[in-house]
Image (cartoon, rainbow, N blue to C red):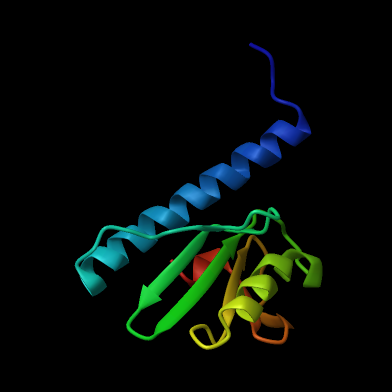
Length: 117
């Protein structure tokens, strides 16, 4: 058997993390809203978010990364979403594989995924 290279291992880790998060979010959505649906967001210019939680009158965009460190560049699609939906979304959440919770930029909170699910 051929061992996956570093890039493939990163991709597999990211996909597994997204799967773990979506499973938890779907369980929450079913209990909280009665719907088994967590949409994602994608623009024609390529901006993409993994999940958008829809609550009455509010949106919470969430992006997930398996990175151990994150910065403003990692939050760029959340910023795009917040600029476009400023009336419906007060902030965004960037889940990552690090250990600290901090404001990565205005309106975007970065927090370890294991503190949320």
